[in-house]
Length: 203
Image (cartoon, rainbow, N blue to C red; front, side, top):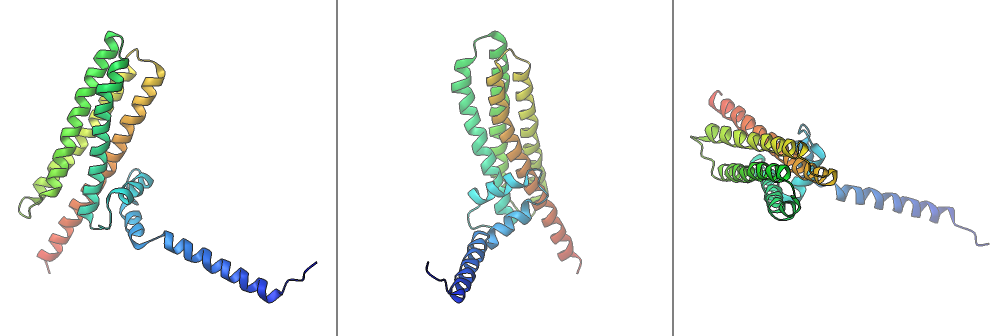
């Protein structure tokens, strides 16, 4: 049976340990830390980090993060709107289901409009109208969350089968969660900018 050199085993163990540490360090970049810090107090922090990692690219400024979160929510809302108009509409067989679908389609269509307006506002901020624009963005994002609740209630009270209700709840909840995180980042941007403005105004 071959003998192992203790020194060689120790060197191998040290090499393996260094490799593992390096791999862990590489997996956590400064950008990831910014995302985690920015999302720490969001209602859905894990989803927030995942969203920013996918949509924010190399941008790390608060405005970029708020825009990225809004884009993610808008994308999901658009996908849901298309899903309602195609797949769900084809499955609606009763009067109550069609009524619930009609209500939900109107709510989600409005959500797409509200998120589109929110993103546009974030992309065209002006110093003089900043607080007014931020108030608009917060109001519109809040409306999206209310729309989601109304849509879910419509289907819950219909005679749609349990599988469709569950699927609808999951899809609408995803939009609501993403919007909640976007609203948090928008509010964080608004409050942070206001504090900086007050500090600069009073040396």
